[in-house]
Image (tube, rainbow, N blue to C red):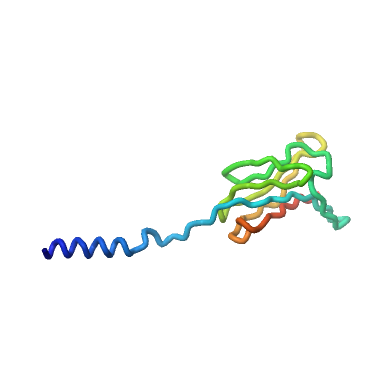
Length: 120
């Protein structure tokens, strides 16, 4: 009887303890908007306003998604802490421009969007 009580007590304690103290990273969809920035004019324009090739949003180490024109945006599936950037080919198809990378935080997932800026 004493052994059975001991086993039941251990099972009760194990079931009450959390299996992991780690916080799970949030995962969800984020809308990515890609922009060209012209510092001399102080203007920001959607990338699809220009003749471009292969506009893509990149989730580093995971996937690449084509950016939709004329909206200059794409929806990507990300986890909190992943890095997102975009690239576009202009002029010659070998002239690739890239945005500054952005690390996704909890505010971006679900309700938010990310603006990726490509300096010109």
